[in-house]
Length: 172
Image 1: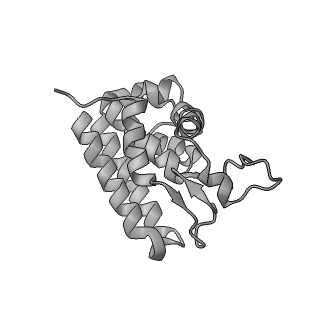
Image 2: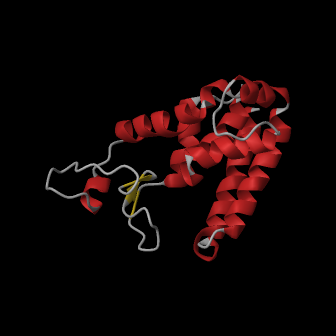
C-alpha cells in the first residue's frame, strides 16, 4: 500500500519537525507553537492586549493547519506539484519562507526565477521530480550552512532536510 500524499500527509511530517510550544531566546520568531511564531502570525488569543508566549500556547491544531495551508502549501502551489516534490517544497516554505521555496524550486528546475509558480514552473516540475528534489534539497543544505545561526541550529536543519527527503522517497 502506498503512503498517503497531499496536504494532510505533509502536515504529519511538518508537525513532527516543528513539535509543540517553544520559546527559544535565540529564535528571532519568539514564542512558537507547532512552528507558528508570534512574530510571523501575531494573534492576541487571550485578549489581554499583547501578543506573548501565552498566545502561542493557545494556538489550536485547526488554526495551525489553516495557516500552513494558506501561507505555505497554497502559496507554493504544492497541490499542483508531484507529491514527493510538494513535500520538500512545503517543508522549505515552512522553515525558510514561501518566497525562498518558490525561488529555489525555480532555480532547481532551471526556469526563470521570479517567485511566481505558473505553468512553466509546473510543467518543468512534472518532468523529473527526483532530479529536482536532489538539487532543491542540496540548495537548502547550502543555504543552511551559510546561515549565521548554523552553529546553533545547523545539525537540526540538516536532519530535517534529510528526513523530509526520506519521507518524500516513501511517497514517490
